[in-house]
Image (cartoon, rainbow, N blue to C red):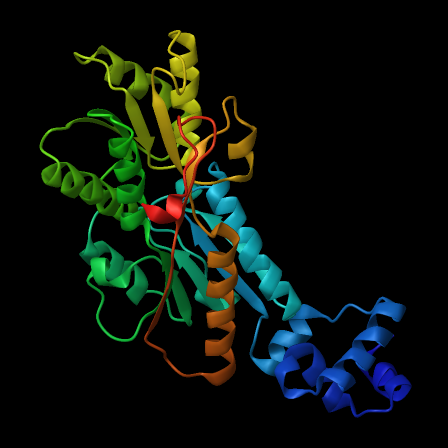
Length: 337
């Protein structure tokens, strides 16, 4: 079975079949669906090498994330993949934690990239990294904090506000000694959320904050150890926040092992609202982020860039929400915070 036979069976030209596969936006939905129906019935699979030679496109997108050990990034990738598959694109996934040095996807092997910018020590390093990306890309991150010049298309969430939202709730509950498990500040996400913590405690000088930093990698093991250190530093906190839900799992483990009841003796709020958060014991209160939607929107913006060929300077920012469950004492309307 080849493309000529598919054209004959569907009553369209070979060029229309080709466009339906390689440039679906240029074919009417009715015609494309008729062609795809025949393709599915005949189990036809286009030759990717021939496609690339004839169109100059690989129909492949690379997605670069800091790690795949955190469920947040898995959900983000799933959202990205969902949109790309619908547009007949393949997705290559790269984890920075497993990429030696400055290794990156070969620009010749992909049409575009979705890049989660996090694991960099400074803006100069980010600029150098992105200068070597010769294909259209969309960032998941805050380009203003990175100090990037020129048009940048990006997607992110209001995580600074999310951290402060969690702290305000715990303060309203009467807590004055806080423990914080933070991401290291050589990452953009860690720096931004740590600043949210510092700004909060500057505004509320009647509080005491103890912060421990957890790096990417084995965050579960590290968060257990960091929680233990927090508990050994003088008067014990009565509330904790963590910069992601994976850290909260480690914190819960340590608290349970130490016989500290959650939330009676220690209230705990995570960040991300990964699918397992509501299944923890106790169910985890957390700052909910539209994890999959971030990936979906990044892919949608990238496909638009690939379709139009135009640079865009657009930043899409998604709100976050405080979801209260069993690891905090009172279930109140978080919209009032």
